Amino acid sequence: MSTEQPTAADSVPAAAPAPVDPAPANPTTETPSAPVAAPATDTPATTTANEEASKENKLPKTQRSWRITGKGEPAKVLKLASDTPVPAKLKKGEVLVKVQAAALNPVGYKTMGLVPGLILRRVQAAEYDLTGVVVDGNNTVLKEGDQVFGWIPVPVSLSTGQGALQQYARVPAIGLALRPPNVTPTQAAGFGIAGLTAYQALEGVAHIKEGQSVFVNGGSTAVGAFAIQLAKARGAKRVGASASAKNEEFVRRQGADEFFDYTKSPLHEQLAAANPTPKYDVFLEAVGLLDPTLFLKSEAYLDPHGVFISVGPQGSGIGNYAHFVWTVLLKPGFLGGVRRKWKLVSVKPVEKDLKEFAKLVEEGKIKPLVDSVYEFEDVLEAYEKVMSKRATGKIVVKVDPAAE
Image 1: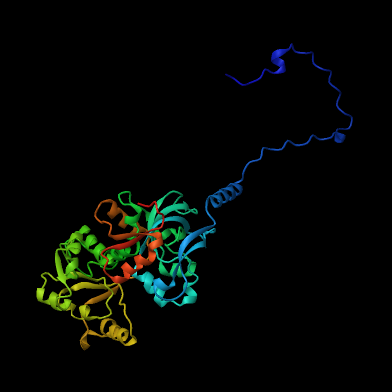
Image 2: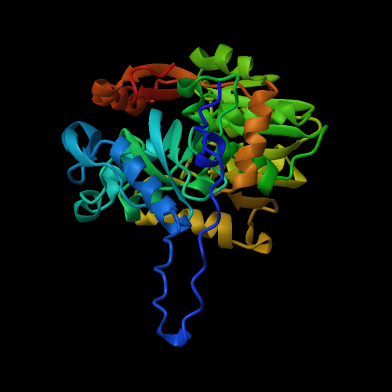
């Protein structure tokens, strides 16, 4: 039914036209009529401001986070705070993520033990790997509602104060990718640092090719296990790996064809005795050994055109590092130096690498590595498990209790 009302012309006969007054003698004295105001409309700037205000109204002002109160072990310096500010302003290239789950890393507790407390106290949440939902895309390639996984690089965390163990985090968009639909938030939480390290070692440094042979020292570590999976996904003909005997089943489940128990005897002796034919094209040292022996003896098991890749020597003692630098990096071949290439993999946030890793996950070629999942309140127990070095896979914390 129409809601239009009849006009006067529709309801009464037309009246005779009224006489028209002659034009005024002096038209300049005519009083102009007031201009009709145009309907008010939001300008783009107003719309943006309104959208931002709406977002801010939806978000809480404060949140819970595991804050670092100083230098030391997690049990002594981590405190659960309930008054941490929710990030209100984003810089260019950052997005705001509602965190669903976080994964713990050895670099997390090592940073707490090495970085001065003055710097650590500025960090409002520990850890780096996360999964979550974008709540503000901030004009990046990501948009509100996107389900993402990724990481906050350690230097970025120290400079911005952001971390994964909080309910809302501002994260560089370059460090995030869409979470594959075939994995849950807790399964994807540990993909960031470990997965990307393995990917960049084999793809970016080794340039792995189909039919090559790969050896992974530390096959039960997260980096090592992802590397085994990735090597097989890229068509490696033979993948060998080392771990303790109790982790053999886990390592073989990742795809290792050969297994070496490093607790039986020195690994370099076992490898030389095995006389691999052909020799390995790629040797990934995923443990972070400061002892250079595996490299120094690698001519017995690494192809002359092969590459030895390290995640970085970790340990203590200036003398130990000096010895490593001389024997591995500086000592020339004519003085007894090793005639093999040694390379360091230093993980970087590269968008295309994260996307390619996510594609491999979606295709089922890379599988999640989850050792155990802890509630947000039980972070200190989770760190105990990480520091015990008995985990096979990632230790995950549910930041959102509803996360799967």
